[in-house]
Length: 599
Image (cartoon, rainbow, N blue to C red; front, side, top):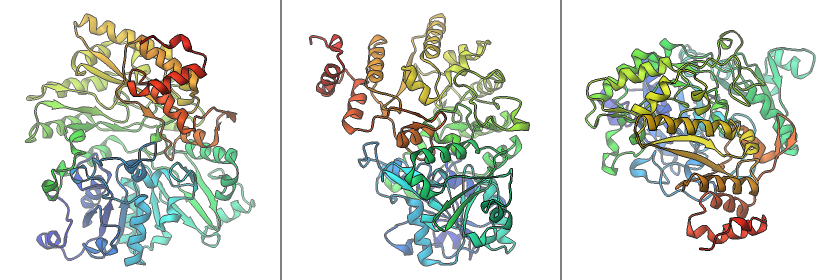
């Protein structure tokens, strides 16, 4: 096993005089299956392609992307595991003080809007080379979208970057097919019909079926036209309608979606078909080094490895349907899982790691206790386009079962040298308490909590929870009661750490005060509170921008004023002395002097 080449000397040592693909990443090179650049490069390597990595090239110097030479087939470009703008800026649009995905946690190792910058760099040097972009930043910006940092509608990143193909969602299948077709001599302009990809065309380049459909001389059940870029810039209502259509088609039964942008047409092919267990196992069995490249040792390593070094991804996808989560638009709502044997094998590899101290930090995915698909109908019909699995109440067809997940946890925690297996990727508590078999809940408290269990009620005002797509407060209260009852029986002193969001669409000052009252009642003083961050690809961001819920076309209150957002956040941390004046004035303005004490 070895790292993939990152320099000319690496190529010489491997005896290679060319590469098939060069992958450019906004993250430092960490060869671990928690990082997209690592998975994609290893998948291509398995298929027999020669792949090199350029991690965090100097975007101020175009020659930095020449260090591995011109690849035979093309460039693959990603900004990293999170959007480069989120990586750089807080919700208040202030620069962050560190970057855990860069050597030594140093900031400034990648540009703003990294996908666009990197792709344009490549175009400067290699004008005719195929360029395929992917990852979260490209995936969530594939259509015209509201950009919080510019506070305007930006067109598809595919157009701004001048890339040839955009891979959205999880990219192993599309990238493999693109690589095969390129290696067979097919021109990149003709590779326009692969599931999980987006391309852009002029009208003359469209196939005849699309032309006829756009001219309304052909009615197709497989194509949807959304409002053009020009239309949604002028109309927030049309923006909301377009977003709703896009989000509802993120399923392998989804249709082709076309959006016009000036003289170009953005064409999204349907999503990929879910990976089966064998395919998932193959991806996670590839020869990852499971750490950062040794070149970063002189900087103290790459901090991001700490969170994932002893963690295991058990599945992908989430049917939770939270409005503020981009996973609906990226990984999708259908669960794709690994086998128990594959997970246990990875745990056994971790055990022999030099730094392993006996603790597996996580076995999970976007939501840890979603091990299987939410209902049996999905295999034939896909997901429901206009209904959620868990909201406003649990669907009658929902399959609630923790047995398989519990079996995996039991096996791993009983491995030699394993002291404890934690669950950090989050438990969906409404799904948990709906399970009539309380075995998993009991064993969760007994074996898999390290004194504190992080959960995500997000808010307690039902009108805000409605906009979030989260269960009502009563459901969370029931979970809390059950958690403490179980721990009392186990004679354990363990606590809940609720994750909270301030200023989410629907939250006004009265809702924020209600949350503060609740926190006072439970005697909880949150150290961290997340102010709602509008990022591309989420329903909540759509509502934030339009102030309309596209599902109902009704107005929604949105706190956009900087001062009000500061106050809503301060109310959730009312014990902080620095917040006193903000909160005092807010309570006066809301006629809630009854909440003002005497100290």
